[in-house]
Length: 174
Image 1 (cartoon, one colour):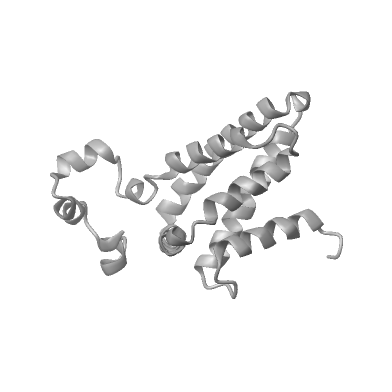
Image 2 (cartoon, rainbow, N blue to C red; image 1 turned 180 degrees about the horizontal axis):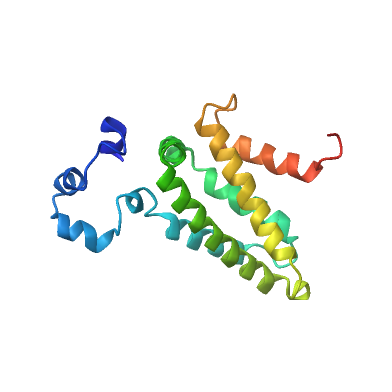
């Protein structure tokens, strides 16, 4: 990320990344299939964290409230917000990374929906868990885009809470 900040994503080479990490190019490719994967390397960890947090929510809590709470908690760590802003800016500015991130988020939708179905078995065979997972991820994506591009709200969690609130209010006043 340091090299991407300094030189730009496209201008940074795998050789430069490997040299900074003090590994060979061959070792780099054991860990990452592409340079884009360096930026998205923690996506699977974030998904695992979301699923774990969802599983820890109270059983009697509405699934939408659970989703709102878990997304709130992953953005609430202020020590990581600047890193998140920088990473989001890179993802949004490099089409190949953005496309890969969307593909990974589609997998997140499936796994979050499956976790929601486990929590709410009576919704089985409906699209409600998928809709909730897609909506929550969509809110997060829009909020991150606006926040990383200089939203007037500087705190990611506050902006996320506002996004969920606006979604809850719906489109009644439009």
